Length: 273
Image (cartoon, rainbow, N blue to C red; front, top):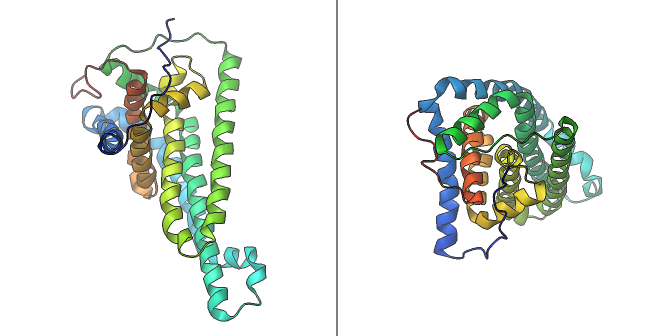
């Protein structure tokens, strides 16, 4: 099979060019949502795994929020001797830091677990987008064990990155004001990038591209990847929206990956079959 060119990333555009790319990434997610009107049955199948996993995560988030004050008190034993205003400020900052870090990990693991549970459904969505757009990849007949180890390796890399980012955000969240303003925005940006790398896996893996090549290709449109990822990340924070967004995100990520690969499209997600 002829593999697509993995061109070196060009210098990221600045100013208006980066803004156009950013909103272009959001538009990719919008094109993914178009499948809800053109292929509703297929998208409903993709929503089922998201509903199952989403219910588990919703319960976990409720438990965390209910016990957030206890958790904040437990991780800040040094604040017990502070006067009331300072002790309360430290605990509020700690609680916010825990929540921000937990949200990042939850969003990533939600996507990863939902993709694992609903792999056959999401593969069908990916294939449908590839078929409609034209120039679908030829199936790579890689050995089964190689595919399994590659999938595990990619998941572990992304999990490692997620945990590292979560730790950094947690520490940053302990800083008054900055932790409640800058850190959430940074979390959405970093979490969005991680989501983009995860969700584009179908398109890149089908073309036998490695995890490193995947990141390098996405870097050719970093602003677009961030626009797509951040929009998806924010929608994932809304329980019902996450269910509807998950299949659309798989479709939109396919469009984004094809853009990064420089493939000519008849249309991102045509309105007809």
